[in-house]
View 1 (cartoon, chains in turn brown, cyan):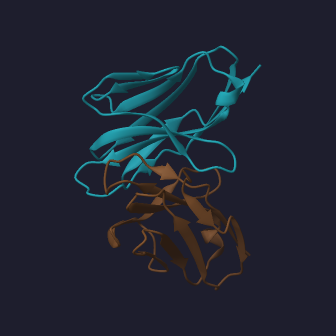
View 2 (tube, each protein chain N blue to C red):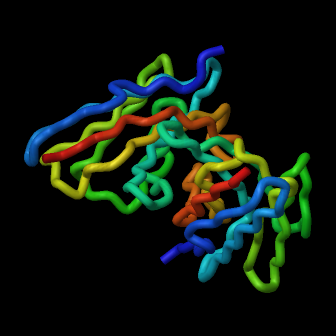
Length: 113
Length: 114
């Protein structure tokens, strides 16, 4: 079975631009979470979606938004990019909406110049 | 502010030795404590997890020790191998949430030398 897949693997943007990151969960998983991992730090929770509804949001500005599609795949959008948005963006999927084992993808490395 | 502290920041262990990573939490009740292992270029992978009603959990060479009163927990890797070289994150799930907001520690870079 395929694991969590994320695209693209690497992305370079300039300040002020917008970016969309994509995630496909493991087949049968209905929950998708997004995390931001800055170099040398632990991942930070951004969003969780379950059954296409937002279930939780971390301390990130409104420039960050996400959605989940009927096939449970998800997109993370970041508007008005700042240099500080440069990070590895991780997607994790799980069967249900809480306390389930999280399976992480390899992430999208975003560089903002 | 919910926070999980982790030490040491980096660790070098001889092959066959014991690797010990310590974590502590504060301010907020947590009820699930996973440890994740991350290799370069990969996402974190769940290694082992414990609930606060258990003081110790062992899976193969990996053991979690949990001290609820001290709000501390640790990962022990017995018979450490070069293949264990990775970054390890302790983490915690807050109680009373219906979603998977996992709070991660800052990570420990482990190098196991032959």
